[in-house]
Length: 254
Ligand code: 13P
Image (cartoon, rainbow, N blue to C red; front, side, top):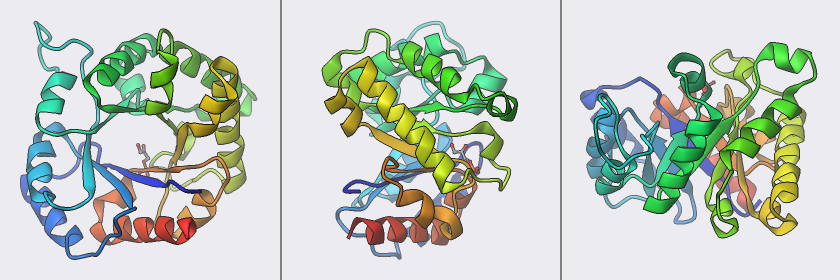
């Protein structure tokens, strides 16, 4: 695999002090120029992290955004505001936002369109709950999530979107998908995108796996043909384990 991205989703964790502490520790490790790393802290830590990581090749991402530039949307943050502080990635449709905050495929679509307009890379999350998998309906659910999220996206923009396959049953549970399950679904996603747009587009999509990824299981997941990286929750909160994940990626790219 020529590209492997390690994206750390901190969710609602770390205050300013914790963020500065993390940044100071992660800067002590040496990264290669080709390492692709992105940290996705809470909104309040974005600027702090951006400033602390200045001069490194670690990028920053946001966990959500609104699909308008500004206006009467109390409590929301726009992609325009994110762009202003140097955010390069933004998660769209994380399962926690879908489940607790009413995120829909339609709102994901609007956010992707707006983020692309601003030049921010959307990381679209898709994935199924355990009962859907038990019913053998995971591929049809993911087809629906992808189909709706990509409505009206120009062909040339499609490969700018990163897709993260995160089976909900594997998030924060310690119960990771097997490398075979993760590969099977990533190959399915690639094939679906080929069908929706073209084989060339399907082939160049970046597809991440997320769900209890940690240094102990990352190698077997990241070496799969159709997996281009990981969206990591818990393990990205610790500088050492984040660094280990980046080193595993660098090894696999050799
Ligand atoms: P965990 O790695 O903690 O399971 O979280 C995965 C996730 O939801 C990343 O977005």
